[in-house]
Image (cartoon, rainbow, N blue to C red; front, side):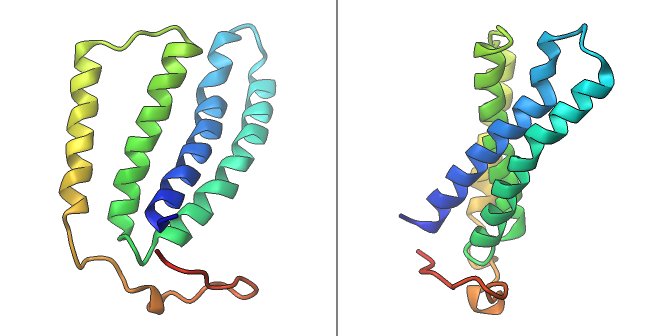
Length: 134
């Protein structure tokens, strides 16, 4: 499976946890704020366990800017699904247009050929095998 696809899949998982942590509590307005913070932190922990490997795997194949813009599109996509199914918020034409503009941003930074740092300059951390970068 291509590296970029692995990165996107890890980012989808990461953002699913983060969206639940940041917005899941909105359906429970009576919950005490300190419980909401504690539960949100516990939900967010797996987000980091997926986000960090996604960035480490992608960096070298993609630039940091490319990774960030892709992450934002994934984040907004996950949020749109969450808002519709969990919060019951239907998208509007304005949110649809905003999303298309963000997708255009991905196309713009994706076209920065030659800007990514070669993978050879980023050896894997100690104890981690270097896998195929494809």
